[in-house]
Image 1 (tube, rainbow, N blue to C red):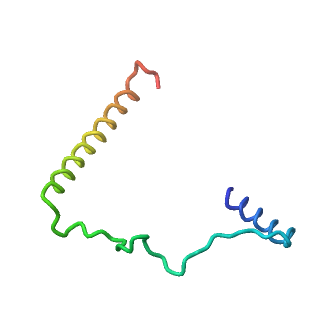
Image 2: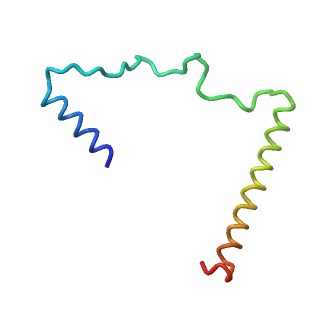
Image 3: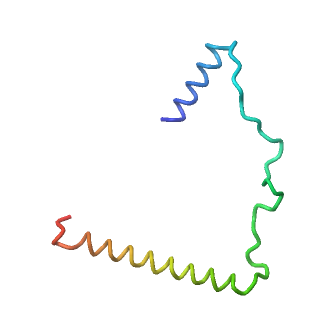
Length: 84
């Protein structure tokens, strides 16, 4: 697959053309975010009250969307008129 193609190409470039300088990516010494914030966001800390309302509303809309998607798809596929 793609991994084999990349490794083969890199090996050819390294062994067959050693005189050609290839620029490589600079890897930082430490792995962190650019702003220095922590990776895990503390969601259970005190948030403004609209935060909980908005997230509950968005979750409810997502549940309704998934429910309708599943049931409409099932009705279309199982309908004998569509001959699927």
